[in-house]
Length: 181
Image (cartoon, rainbow, N blue to C red; front, side, top):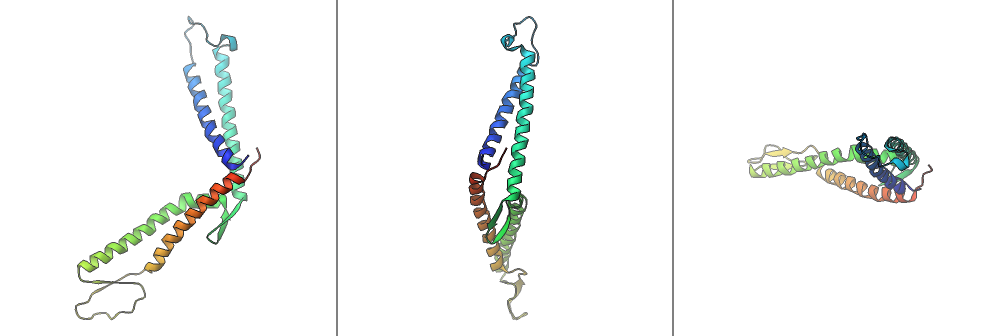
């Protein structure tokens, strides 16, 4: 089965487990004066026991599927924007590294934009990293930026490119790579 099929099965398993748990909850006890609705199937106690076993079996199937997907993700190497990592590494990077990095880079860009507006409103000049200026010219006050703004914009774009490529590759790999259960 493909990774995509395994992920879809995991979702189905979740729904089945939910239904079984609901059934078990509804049939935990019964008034002895009422007829057992599952008399033909061995009784309510038997049905609840079967459903409990069914939940355990489905939970084990879910664990097995997740482990096989994880093994495949560790085995499969993918190149994105000139950088090759296992799918497992890319998934962790996408989940745990990329979002705070994106937020940090956006915060830097917003701070520079705000700083530029503030400096202009005060008649000052915002000067980029490495710029050659004469300090102390009459009526000129400069605010120096300690980061290369062009490189910052390029890093933001590079990160967005990597995430876009990665999403496409993950979809492709999930649809084409197989796992054995």
